[in-house]
Length: 252
Ligand SMILES: C[S@@+](CC[C@H](N)C(=O)[O-])C[C@H]1O[C@@H](n2cnc3c(N)ncnc32)[C@H](O)[C@@H]1O
Image 1 (cartoon, rainbow, N blue to C red):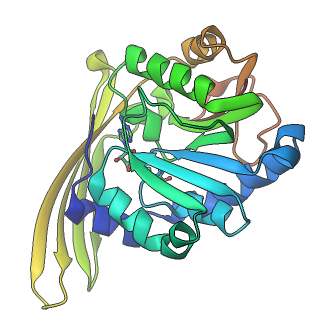
Image 2: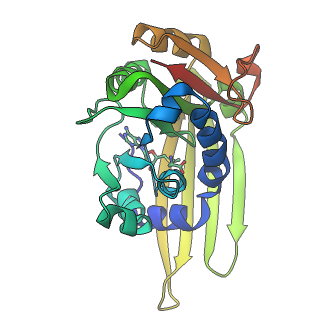
Image 3: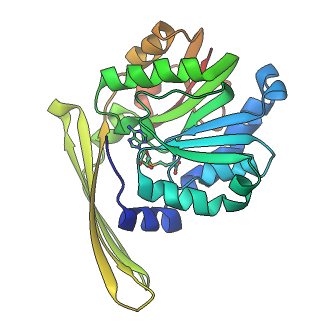
């Protein structure tokens, strides 16, 4: 299990929430148009991180559970959703996406921004599919994105962000024979005192074969599963492996 440490969680909350903000309305609109979406206003944000996608659904009166393995990320998610937690509409729990259970089923499970690429292997991914199938109502939807093999093979390189608040150096290393791409992020972030705190974060993405992913979803009990682009979630892609990122849409 990969843990995002507290210093990195602070940077993530301040700088990397854009993806969740962009995709949340598209996933929401897709789900709301389905019969299950009319009936079940409940979401599990799996690998919720700092909870920005959860926040979009909370603002639209959904009951939301966020699950993540990182206490540092969960602390920000709880702070961001404090009023909704106090109102009993939201909760954020620590757990492993590869093996979890909910006390009551939900209509929609979502895992965004490479979250399931963080699982170490196919066995863990299959565990996530089994757990998610059990967490859904009949007819419920599971929507998640994956970086494809083609996308991850382009990850090598160095990126530098440098401004008043932080200096961030991101290095991407692809180890194709391990089916892995690593990002090592070294950062210096400005504290309230004006001093800079240094952190190191290494995260990896596992490459998954998309045909195998679809087959594993069906094996876990989903009756349909296909790859799509986030702006056309109802349209299966003919050649998903040529994309750099796909959304996988599955229905129980
Ligand atoms: C790139 S972040 C995505 C966060 C959020 N979904 C978003 O869209 O911004 C990946 C998240 O997955 C979490 N994570 C990684 N492995 C996990 C696991 N096995 N179980 C639960 N959470 C995990 C990390 O702690 C991190 O918060």
